[in-house]
Every structure is written in C-alpha cells, then in structure tokens.
Length: 135
Image 1 (cartoon, rainbow, N blue to C red):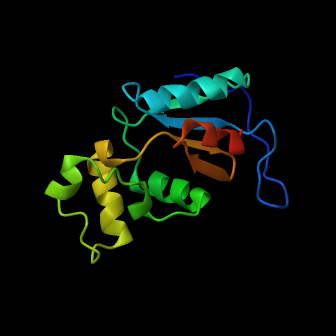
Image 2: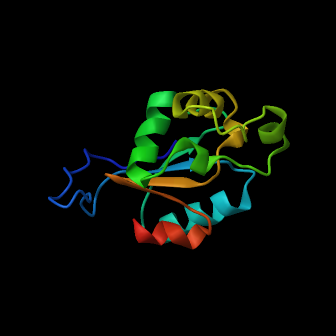
Image 3: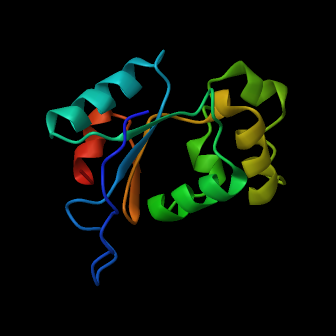
C-alpha cells in the first residue's frame, strides 16, 4: 500500500486541507474508473494511500466520516445496478442510515467507486475527472 510520507497538515480556516494533505483512494483494481482515477492522482505527482475496499472493507465509522466529507448520505454511494442491491431489498426507504452503513460494510461490492479523500474533502470519482476537484 503506497502512502505519503510525513503527517498531513491541519485544515485551513475554510475546512480545506493544505496542498500536502494525505490522499486516499477507495479503489477496486477490477474497476476501469478506479484505475483511471488513480492514474489522474499519480499524474499530479501524488503517491496516495490505496485502499482496496474489497479486501479491506471500510468500517461503519470510516464510511460515515467519508460521507461527511462528501456531504452525502449512505444511500448516495450504493451501486444500485448491482443485483445484490435489489436482492437485499435496499430500495426500501424505511432503512436507516445506520442500517445502510451496515450493508455497505458487510457487502463492499455495493460501494460506488472510486472515492478519493484529501484532508477534509472527499469526492466520488464518477467520472474519474471529478477527482481533480480535490487534488
């Protein structure tokens, strides 16, 4: 797993991290868009932490923190085209955010990808060019 060296700087007054904040990509190597987003990051000279979330699923707390940084809710990062989404009945609007986080943790295939985090910001890299907004 590649990591930036040194501690990331504190965020600025507006909540954005400095230019040298650690970059993490939640990544699936089988996903073309994940590979494209990683390439964009590396072209900027950044050596990100690569988190293969299929092998190392994010905890509910990690997912919650990433969603906070994205300004999104759990339902926003589900792969709704995944057959498992339908099989588990996740379209049900009565499911709480906590329940949805549990499903994302237990079934990481349901997480839309890639997600890139830098400091206090995160973005869904769909299309991959969207990662340029935070790197």
